[in-house]
Amino acid sequence: MRNEDRHIIEVENLVKKFGDLTAVNDISFFVREGEIFGFLGPNGAGKTTTINILCTLMRPTSGRATLNGFDVVRQQNQVRRSIGVVFQDPSLDIALTGIQNLYIHAYAYGVPPSVRKQRIEEVLRLVDLSDVGNKTVRDYSGGMRRRLEVARGLLHFPKVLFLDEPTLGLDPQTRHALWDYLLNVRKREGITLFLTTHYMDEALVADRIAIIDYGKIVALDTPDALKRMIGGDIISLKTEEAEAAMAEIRNQFGLDVQRDREGVFFEVPNGEEFIPLLMNNLKTKLHSISVRRPTLDDVFLKLTGHDIRGEEGGDAAMRRQWAMHSARDRGRR
Amino acid sequence: MGNALGSGSGKKITLRELQGLYIIWYRDLLRFWRNKGRLLGSFVMPLLFLVIFGSGIASSMAGLVGGGVAFNYIQFMFPGIIGMVVLTAAIMSGVSIVWDREFGFLKEVMVAPISRTTVAIGRTLGGATIATIQGLLMLVFIPFVHISVSIGQVLLILPLMFIMAFALTAMGILIASRIRSMETFQVIMQLLLFPMIFISPAMFPTQFLPSWLGIAVKINPVSYAIDSLRQSLTTMPGFGISIFGHPMSIAEDVALVALFALIMVSLAVWSFGRQE
Image (cartoon, rainbow over all chains, first blue to last red; front, side):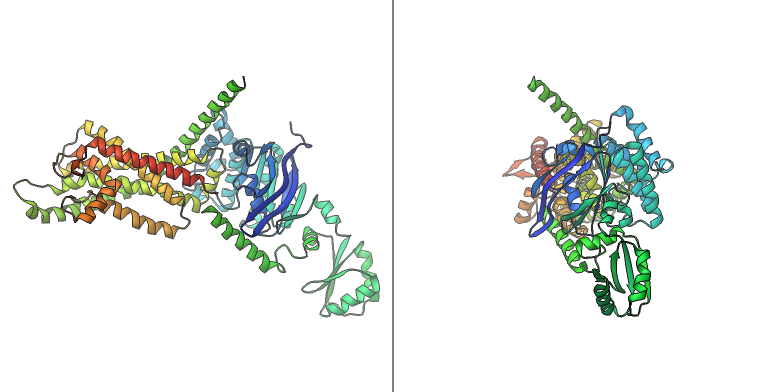
């Protein structure tokens, strides 16, 4: 039934502006049916704005997007029936029980009465909440609430489940557990997962990742292919004489060296073999040497020139996000 | 053939919207039912008004009015109290959308395959139903007020309360779709609730008011809703509202309130639909 060649989401030249601020700047991509697709980028990069457009909550300034073959602007109801959404912020009615939340959702999405009860039990079981279905959501823990939102998002047999920073604000253990549930959901329901995150380890779960920064997609590939963009291993040297070390490595090995807070780092094809070479030729005094395989952090840094947690572009990113929020608020009036 | 197909899917969509309408209404009632505190709380204000305010005013008025005809202030005030309960419950219900936004549930509603119009009307019906129930519950005070109310009178005030509640819930939604913060919400409630109740014949006869206040009473749509309740529940001639010397009948009161309801729900639907 699932067809991996089919593009469940297609986005062409999508632009969203809030006043002078371009939150999403001419992005195009597609998502294959059944894959886990990750949007990776710092806060304020335009991830949530893109999701909001795909979920029909916002209209794009220009460009077009289709989901399950339906246009997100002109065929809103069909799109809405095709998707489940787990928002970044909580969206449950905490005064009601878990089952009541699901019942309302089932009704609103027209889940046939004949399967309603059975389906509610099924999704509750899927996220391990069967025991507490009749408890008021106010008494749920943060992780349980998230899981209930996942269950709710799945209830009406959607084609795509959107997860906007699904583990934000959860402790590491709960994050891990949630991911176990999500991977199980994907296996059992065979649906497409579209997630945004700024956690690198979370993005690694994805089949393909789009790296987004300042409203632009700067790279889109499988996690492995993205890591191969870094030419091998990364060697970091801790030293107080970073300038001297940089000059030496440039002159002696002809390598491209960059600075970080504690010293310098550079890429080499084979880290373990390079260390003896380095030891024999380097005169600068070092505190330590470390070799590691490239991570998505490195990819992100290389592509955007700044850290994803925004130590460098931090202020600019923060200003941008603030501007986006206030522009959004103005737009509502 | 294309035509037949079109009307077929049209019917399906209408059914879905009706289901949506039902579930939005149902949620409001479910929340109301689960919140027993709110239910109990709704008795406190009217009780205070009837027992303390009512007794106090009644005893001081007894000497003033006189003229042979005994004026029973508590009986006069009782329909006003019902009106006050319905008004407060309705506006609160409408404005509770602000809470839904605060706690995020509004997003779940906004992304559901139900039109904004259906959501707004569903909420209005839900709030109106709750407010009507609360108004109806005030009838437990009848023994203390010493009036006799027939089943027929109860059946008559039911739709009256509902139309009034419908109008005011819609007004609440209209306001809620315009405001963003809980602070603004508090201010608006104060600025709205009290004038609407006190610039009306709810608590005192309006015949003896200074003319500027009398005009304000006649502009306030709540006045007519309360007038219709009072005419239905009590037989006190001479305390009704009149426009240009013409005393309003129950039917005329209802017509005005219904017109107000129509305007409010249209504005609420329009304003709610414009939110992004």
